[in-house]
Length: 441
Image (cartoon, rainbow, N blue to C red):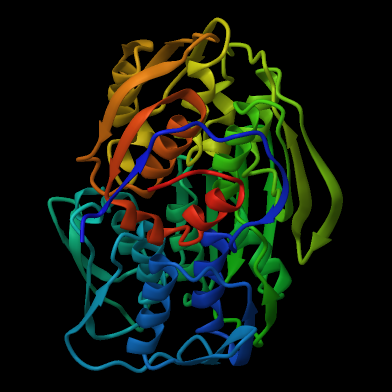
């Protein structure tokens, strides 16, 4: 069966309400933390994607049982020392950097060798940013050329560390936080601003944690060896998934969209800030606090005149997964959009910055690049009539979805390959597009 779609027509005007799948980052964290809790945890609206399924398979291989019910998943944990595993265990994280990096933190006290592997894309990503700090705890960690596969043999004699996370990587910070749980004493972390879902979970679970902040850094202290009880959790909607429908609505004529019950944690809403600075009209309504996370309905309507932006660099970490679709908005905006220091984009599932520039050039959009800074010369009158083929993008789910939104808003006839990659993070992506009126063959 050919793994591609064809899109020949722009989407027609729509006025709809939708919901999106559970947040991927929170889904994976909830699975891993439930596996370390004492008792049966119930997880509702868990994202049923390949990355999360791999997280469930991982905890099963570590001796943790889970069950799927109609409304939720139930995971039975046995505490911080509850993992039971066979010798020479191999954990396949698939495409999930979050899973591969965070599980290393939880294996820090396992006195058996465990091998972490991943797919072709994940195996190209840098793991030294995690293995180096985790080694300081006292674990024996070996990797090939700073990449997967990684072998870890934990230690029963761990020591707390002081760690400076300077990349703005929530995965690196969270891996160290999870390792700190297994360690006697006080682990101290100075971290560049990034997603704080793990911190929110620790607070909700009454894990001993102290957090202070200034404009650039968060300062985190974690007292280890504190078992915590099982929990019930409803995973909120994923704003990264919403991003594609938000830009679809902005660039479509006479359209209005409401997306229900979305996580609008301030470390994740960079895309909203950026688009509103570009003259969009995106609003949050029905705000509520859910166990530390802020939830709301997102209201967005089409905008005929977006404006170019000089994007503040401080927004990079809170929009890092959404820049590809932001670039499509910039392509249609009036004026020049300037984005700086996007090196982290090339350390994702694919070299996203490189691929995005190639796609924009293919569409006739002028892009100037200086190392990891780019300028996109927008064209508000951009209307495509040619044929466009998108393939060889390392099966990156966000490149796939970016291309679909471009085709439905800019015109032309598109053939887009590797559509199965949507299953990594957003299995319902095409279903929702069709609900909004997209014609996809």
